[in-house]
Image (cartoon, rainbow, N blue to C red):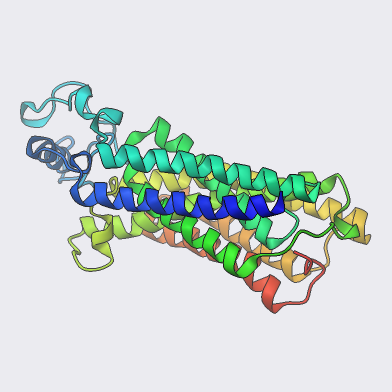
Length: 347
């Protein structure tokens, strides 16, 4: 079963790689990634519409298409009928899944296949180890990437307009799983005595789930910064990478939504870890490097949510805080395990 898990991981990586290539083909050549001139003109009209005779501002967000929209402040809802200059809303035939081309369907299919094989690799690893398959860093990376891709599939099913982000989601999955297989791989071993507790299922599973959601949230955060620059007229690298992704305002809202889900779960996981530490090591908190960086991540993400709720803080500044939070998570996952001696070194 351990060998089967390793083989399934290879299949998973190639499935995500194929999905990434198909997303790239769709972005470059697929009709589903392009919009008609009337639709683009309609969005530009809406983006510069005035409200009550005031100066031009963003007055509407059109779901699924907004190449020229950008805002650092509140955005009102789009009109349900008609619009500036008598423009009509986009017809249902051009929205949602009806706009997906062949390459897009291949990309989604490969991602679904990759997620299923990914899950099978985790299950096979757990059966071989006779425990939940997240007892070391290799297994943990496999688990959080699966949570991330599963959350992505749910999102793109409900909001097909987010599909262009699939290229970057697949890229992150290939990179992390490749790193796990080549660098982090660890043969199956029994759990150390400190982990033999029911808190193993509670603490590690919740920290894994929250990390997966926050990992996914870092992708629209990074793309928001690129898209925002693109909408400001920057056309060089790397801003051209954001040419086909949804509008900056939509990416920023998606970033906030994912972090609003992941942060409470992460908070619970940190508290559960402190309770478990009291049972295992007779102290709830000892400023162990892993605990310290978990606290740093918690403070940064709390700062992100606080800044997001503060109208005077620009959305670009807020998003950079979210990126910083993800970097602290990477430091806790990789840096602490490699460069520090701690009670969590078994990970």
